Length: 376
Image (cartoon, rainbow, N blue to C red; front, side):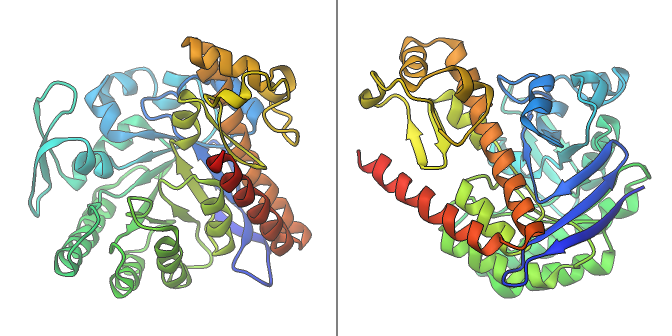
């Protein structure tokens, strides 16, 4: 039911193009997954996501457990029917949210006690609970329950946390019973290379159909992220998908692909879109800037999304400053399209044997634009 195969590799880097078969369709990798935290990608309807080229979306176990509850989603027929999305879905374990959003956390070997960020009610989540919730939600790909340690972290605590994550992963594997769901293990270990390598090896002993790299893009520098990827990715199986969790800045995507990552997700395109910030081939652009008030050009001359085909920077800036909801929709549509298609273009470049040039051209143009736009 789940099969991954590499269809092309870049000889100069670790980049690869693949196909991952799931019950709801074949995912062509590398792929960017828009995040629908609460069973919706904010400001974008499912039919628009299809038009934008999205192949798979992500929803969040913690949030859906808190509201509306996994039982209601199950009664609706699972996430696919609940949110009217016919393609693959991935749910994360809820671990990151438990450790970053919930208050009064208390970690034990058995699981985590926490209070809801919504109403303060007390909850306890074990690895088995996370899997049970995800089974009811019914996603194609689900994640093992893990601990995501905040930075900066002490090496000794990080080691203990990583070892606990491995033990929890084994419990998740033993509890998981749905054959139509692929359970991924998550590599942890903060910014400590030896811990990352150890975790990768120990998770492979448990044997998962895919492996994620968690605990990055949580405050470390880009250079630190790449250093951890450089030491971790080579230790993961070549015949299974690799997923870099919570990463969506354009240059991080390209550099992740160059190191052999297959899957990415991030709330960045819609979060930035709601705040009037968009990504273009010429860098990042804050439309609240006064210089766009009389700029009647498109957001990105190289983009063919609905927003870029129909609206100008001046108009979208007007909507943004006036507090109109349409501004969030137009910017979110563009940003999701930009990231989904950036990764798709990288995939085609790998297949065509020109990824190294594609990487170099994009990085130079985008970063030059970021520098100029931020300066002005």
